Amino acid sequence: MRERTLERVRKLLAKAERTDNEHERATFMAAASALMAKHGIDSLPPAGTRQTPGDRVVTLPNPWAREKARLVSLVAQAVRCRPLLIGRGEGGQRVHVFGFAADLERADLLATSLLLQMASGLARVRVPDGVTAVRAYRRSWLLGFTDEVYRLLCVAESQAEQASTGAALVLADRRAEVERAVAAHYPDIRVSVPRTSGTGYRDGVAAGRRADLGRTGMTTDTAPELAPGR
Image (cartoon, rainbow, N blue to C red):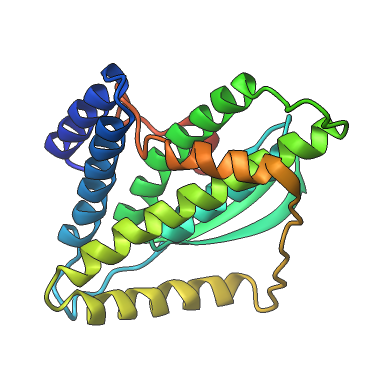
């Protein structure tokens, strides 16, 4: 991602962090996510240009390794990568992410930011009075946060795609290329859906709605959790 784009995202998010007005905060964060989505469209090559998808294995450590892996997976999926949860390995839960370089980079930046935000948000959570299954509440909160972030990212990506003339065909070709790369590695894929319950999920959704879709001060260095080969 170009440094100029990163700097604009940093400035928008800095404004979001400084204001106490929730409406202003939401406006700044929406602008930042839209800018990152637009960059994803602008970085597309001309139709007919041949590129090869890449891939990387991401390892997410405990605590909440499975929930972290799900966040990484859905963020990657939202920005046109193809993630697969491949289970526990040395160091934690593993996600194998396939995609083109620009989209892998966007997934890297967003997931790094959102993992930090999810952790800090969970640390601030106060379990409501009367809730006895505290761990179940916290897990549901994490799932709600992740689902709402995924929804917001998908909206931004869809709007950027619709605003671009001719992007649909290029994106369809790239999705097909990514799926072929996945099929070459994993011919048999099983889908699982996590179970959610209660107010923890709803509270997590609310927190996800307020999340920055990027992070002030982020750099172009690859995050440790998303470094290739981990």
